[in-house]
Amino acid sequence: MSTELQSAMNAANEVDRIKKELDDLDQKRKVIEDLKANRKAPVVMLEAMTRLVIEKRMWFTSFSEKGTAITIKGIALDNKTVADFMGQLERSGLFSTVNLDNLKQETFKNNLNLKQFDITCNKALPQKTVEPKANAS
Image (cartoon, rainbow, N blue to C red):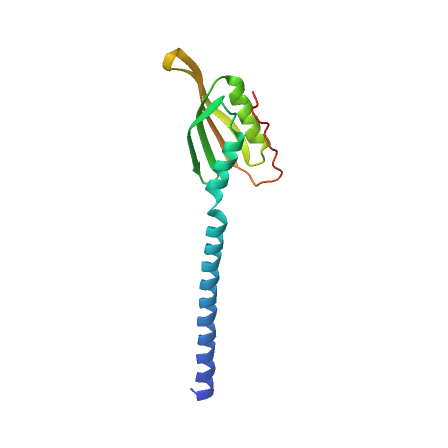
């Protein structure tokens, strides 16, 4: 092999190596950008839930998020409160496919009859956020 050909092959190999390194760096940059963009997501979701809760008429007992699926469990004074909360979830623009999976009456301390509920929904791409009414009942 001539030295010119060998030199060209070495240069081509070096270009391929640099391209691979640039691709690796680009992938790492994208991962860092995704992490930065998503690091505030749990805080934003919790803040949204705080705005949507019907004050003094319902309480969350658990909240979980798996991918885009959200599960909300809680206790409410009555069926209407649960229905109003579900409506607020739908109107918020933050959630889609809001479903009531379970609603049952439970007796708590002092013979207090409350509604225990399980709601599932999906995170939606935010479009237009509607502020919930304060103290809806």
